Image 1 (spheres, helix red, strand yellow):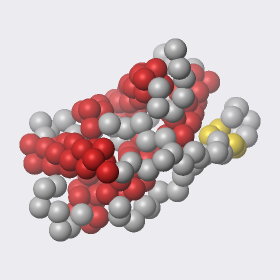
Image 2 (image 1 turned 180 degrees about the horizontal axis):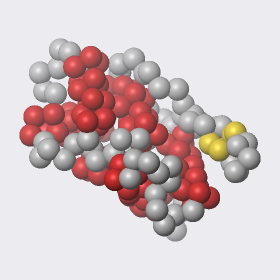
Image 3 (image 1 turned 90 degrees about the vertical axis):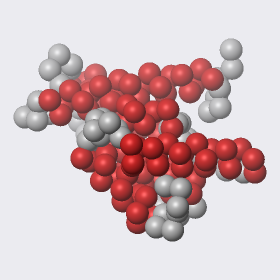
Length: 171
């Protein structure tokens, strides 16, 4: 089995990590007075957040198929890399989110910035296919959503579409 940024196992791991991180975010929305969700330790909470950030710092692992889950989130750590870094990069508009994201190493608050890897850009037919997939997914969410979008997600979505792609008829 091969491991690396483009390995299938790496992509599957990101999906599991994203599900765990989104679950934490959704649970925090249910108890707005809590700093961490009930039933999880501070260490586990921080580790889950850090692992997700490490993946985001390494490469864009977000896929249009993740939008249903992500649309239920409010955390800037989940939404900003997608809407202010990865999608602007893909659509060739201004990036307004600085990468890599800050990682807290321990309870003492030690900061670490894992080096950001700049993978080969998507080009040619693959880029056209990826752009079309994202265009369709974003359009569907902005016009036909089921009402399950958080207000925070909806704001990120509308800002990206209407401020960054004002002339796009497809989104």
